[in-house]
Image (cartoon, rainbow, N blue to C red; front, side, top):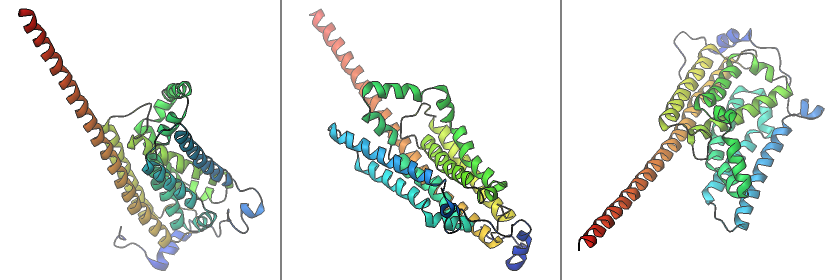
Length: 312
């Protein structure tokens, strides 16, 4: 994304953005922040990530105890997702992201796009259903098909929560408010991870779902999301969003570029997963049709042989 002709640059761009920026933003992490003063709410996210990793490991152990196999690549992908989330929430990156929008955007891409893709490909829901006793698995399946979850798993709902959340964060005063509020900082990061996971799970379609949308719906949603994501990056670049921060125009432009190009990469990877799933489903459908055709042929042959034997 190159700068537009006539766009103020250097000192002029900094002056243009200066009236939107406060003199200073208090640090939430590191020396002088909430972590030094007392309880840091972001610790709750650390605990949630650790609980997810331990739960997955426990379910893997149960599969082994039951003598059942589990593909190694799924475990490795889930571990990669956990590692990306842990890195994105690491104290050093949190402190740097609080002070620099470029680092924050790197966090956002890791937590909201790349980590969810790896986590979803680990198929945690499939592993959970296989690890539960049959009655508990049936109860969970019924719960997953309840109306609220069916609404939540609709592609348009996932799109609104994920991409709509980005627009709300960067085009309103929410981002600047987050920098000075520990609880709001926690909620925003939780939403980034949860909405990214939901969006990826709905579109990828590799785990059981209460509402498996048709391929055309999921592809259309992915294309819409990619377009809206690109538009947001261009708005941030052209209009110097988010406002009300101490970031210079150059920093905001660099952050917008990261959103634009890294977002393209993440969406291309998700598209690969989507088409891979579609091809597998098509192959399964063709195999079922071939088996059904063979069964009909056998029945027809048996009927003809029975008729011939009766005539004799």
